[in-house]
Image 1 (cartoon, rainbow, N blue to C red):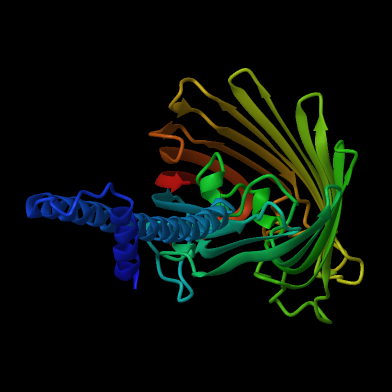
Image 2 (cartoon, one colour; image 1 turned 180 degrees about the vertical axis):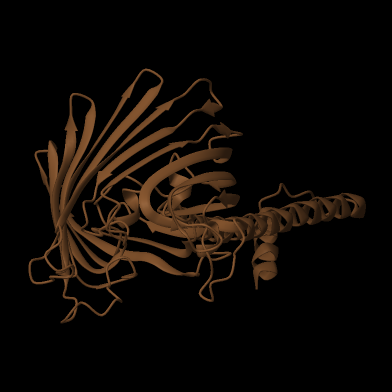
Length: 411
């Protein structure tokens, strides 16, 4: 059809050409026909070129559309990954302690041990435009306290969910946590690669562990935070249950309350924790850095609840404190020192020895940081608590020396 139209156009063009006389030669007629054929070919080529341009434009539009869609998907994935943070902590060490006691059969046990002290894999999810966030970790810790011998610890942590909680924050000044929650009480971290020392301190050995429940926090004009939590079950009650048959009744729920903030470049936390309705903890933590020296102070007052008359009218409370000082002598080297004193009386809060009226401990842990996330440290410690330890014949002893080393990473 298009070719027919072109022939008609050519006819009219030919009709418009000047006519020669009947005597015009055949050669002139043939020349005119060739010119018409050339014009017809040119017109066909132009039509074909326009078709190709339209086809190319459609292809480019489809290509651009595909690229846009792929870019949108990529950006969505990037946004999700930006809100997701992975954190890992791990440490392995060698620990040696004097007066490590005997096993259950009364036989001598080794004074030293190699073990995996910590292993944790955590995930934090904090979407920018949503009022809900999540924090969780899987792993465990096997680090002993100064009251424990190396062989009292497992070779490696019992792997389990250590904490997992959702936080609802409808506004800047209020948040509500729900799940398996870490406590705000105490200075030392449960996962000891976050601490300045390898072993768990005497004071920290009794501080609360993670529990299942809920906690609300209110921020007051950005000056300080007030919080309160309620817990029905604890992740580990071994430090708070009694197995000597002198208790009657059963443990109850736990709850905590406190306030935290900063004044004159000093961070503070004041806390109260009622553990299983069996005993109550009141304490505070202060932290401050002056130049290249970091310092912290933690004090705890424990008291048994009146209805748990465990010790036949013995002392019902104890008071103790830990002082931490950590000079940073270079970009890679720091020298943490921990000094502790506890007046336990015969309350048996920290050790079952009623003779351990006064407890003293000192721990020194020179540390070399290969980077911000990797370190090696060695430790020497001494703890004195009358009749709280035993030699390899089972005879009571009043003190213990600790030597330890540890490699660790956290990022």
